[in-house]
Image (tube, rainbow, N blue to C red; front, side):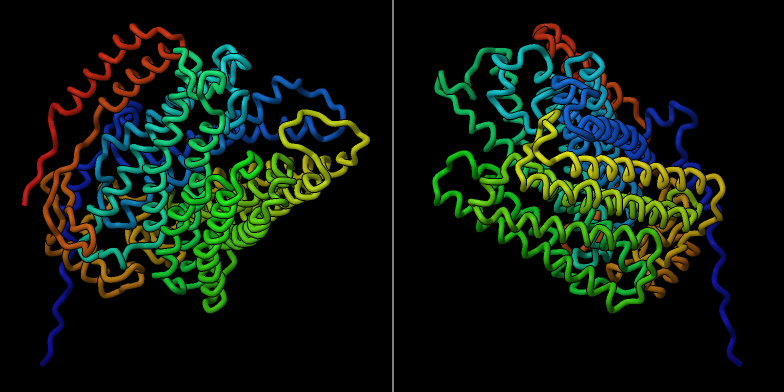
Length: 637
């Protein structure tokens, strides 16, 4: 007679021990000292949301100024500050920190089956430095000396001769300060992806979201030094008396553009590739179909960033470069289309062969694909060098840029907010307001940016604060401004829906979408230790591997791979994901915040040329570093 062996009961005492060991410090102090990647991701989210509101308000003021000819809402000096701060905010203080700092921080360890980032204290430091740099550069706006030469800050316009005062110094130091945060985040992501994947998660079994963040992280590490050097040289020109960008003393103004765009054009792909990663997670969940051509999509995400480094000078076709140089960069611009096209094919084919459920997250991804393709088609037009030279510095360029940046980066962010809202909060969002928010944003965005193509082609230059009524630009600018207001209203509806859903939404459960990746295998919100047992992985769609999930439940019941003796985390080999060792992760720490305070004081004193005092302030940095390394986590076989 056959007998059935009952499944062992969950190891509740072990789970309780994990909860006690990983429990966060209560109250405000817990948030100030946290090293939990999920809390840091939420801190990034709320901070970038505030900065997004600031950048959006700056854009709406500009659109109000341009809504009709000869308007006087703001003057030319204020307008210069508005468009400069808008660009700086959206590039450096919203899209990058939202996709990497918020989404990446919260989700990356969950997707690879880790309990935290590779360097938890460095992760906390990256957030506090980001916050401090944002406060630093926005203090210039409230002081009336905000950066006013654009987010690209061209010289000689940005030189001390033409722009005295502290406005450009705020730009230089603020960008350097912010770059420290991005560099720390990128380094942490790379090590986490290569070393903290769950045993069995070889590179070919890693989710596409992780490939996207890996590509963006490498892009940041190679692109940011160019911008940092550029801003250091400009700061020295303005404050020490060097002449790197002064042709009268052997300098070269084009040196600024080459160094800036060597960062600036790869930066476009660094912005949108993490958004590609969001799309590649939402599409499988709402089609219940694995992404078509998975290996090619993973390679394409990396190639987009890699090839982007060979495209920077297509921003400089009007500067008089030699023809052979112009042809090379035009060809590179054409080549970068190939990996982008591979991804568009994979997304659309996956939706076509799967059973697409057009819930709000997938609607935003469909809108993203439309906007990305439209922006890509206008981008290809810049291959024609004569055409590029004609539309340089016109609103046509702004239209193309925003179809890519807002359409291809921000739309997936909105879709991701809806998609992972149940995981973060444990609540379901309200579907009808979600769909209404999509259509408002989609229609408003196209009404805002499409007419810019036309008004650019008929000659409207960018960066002008007003225009006469006789040029025929008034109707287009009116439509654009209405589109801006409609987009802003749609974003308000989106955020209001999430707030109401947080308080009134139905319980979501661990997996409301039947998502594909590991984060959907655990409770919503996730526990502080992420995984009670280190998960079993045999494909990139781990949540759909039912045998593996059953194996996890058996391991938990038998106390196998639980690692409850401390803040323990397995380390695996970079390529194959073979188990290597166990390391003990640090817990809450005050030193990241203390170190940030010391760095902030140094940058403030540098702004006012108090070199000696800045040197004394750096002593606080040294003290923080000594405390930081006073007790290192242990590791053992």
